[in-house]
Length: 186
Image (tube, rainbow, N blue to C red; front, side, top):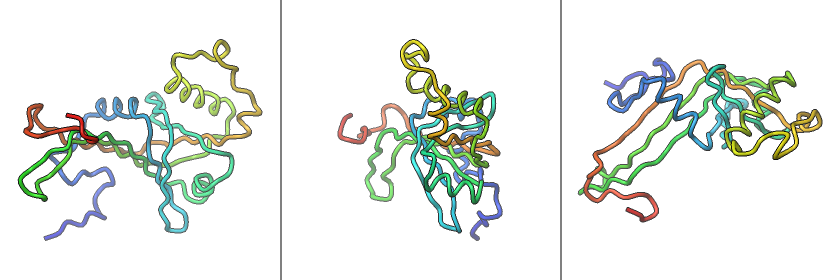
């Protein structure tokens, strides 16, 4: 008999053998992932947008930014529910049958509510966190000019308050026969 997946928690992973329930593993993956996909909704229509982001572990939140006007902002103003996802691809795993072919992977999915950050102080803090993640070798005030109010007026900063998350991973033995990386390298 089929399970009623709609009645289960959003963070429930169907394949229990691949579920990661280690919050430290999930947090580490959120820290290292270079990009994420933000899913919002408008009038029942899902919308997904790839974004640079930063995970603020102390605040249990994800920050990102977009242009001052656009689809993401419009959707967030209409419905604060969101989903955010990151993933990594491992090796391709060949098999003797088409159905047996597989791939190693790891992923995290976050469920929560997204809000437009209104406070200039929090906007600036979030943007500096983003800059530290991607340009950590550069220092504000030394290597680039500090953020000014005119810049804050040209962007929208978002905070995803994390309600729940799930992690999932498939990993095989290092000596898996015929395994190779996508793109042809071994």
